[in-house]
Length: 199
Image 1 (spheres, rainbow, N blue to C red):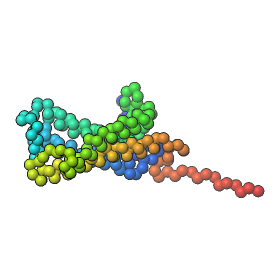
Image 2: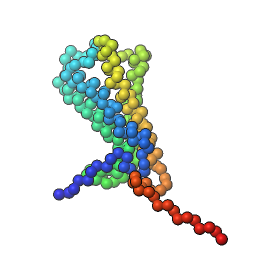
Image 3: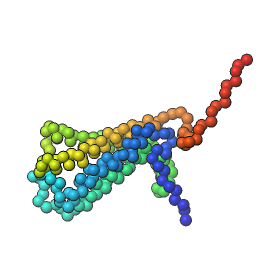
Image 4: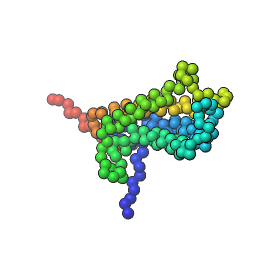
């Protein structure tokens, strides 16, 4: 029976991940979590105080699967983004068929991350324009429902910028030139021998 090796943690990469990128990668699933949780009551036709004249009188049968699936997909994408700060974002895990153990081409990770980050910025970062009255916004029954929605949705506005920042850090790290992988923490590199004085 083959022995399963433990998954490599975040930051276990060929070249060190900047501390800020490592923190952002670890925080991202929690950044989008409030929006995912706020969305879930819509699966059972609880509108969270939202007043939408265009909303159907009865939700379709597939609505629960759609809402729950969308929240699960959101968290899955946030977790997938952590690959930009992980070893498995540089080398495909060996358990994957056909491609396991192969190095990831940097552009194969950077391009989808950059495109996805820009799409997320366009999707979420226009909310302040709606709140300021520049764009139309769905109303709420009272100020408490409005405040709850904004508190839960506002962190998701960081999703796109975080993905773009992680993609930029990944690109810089993967294209870096110089010595090979750094030594593990706690192991010092040997010092070069002292130069002999010239006679």
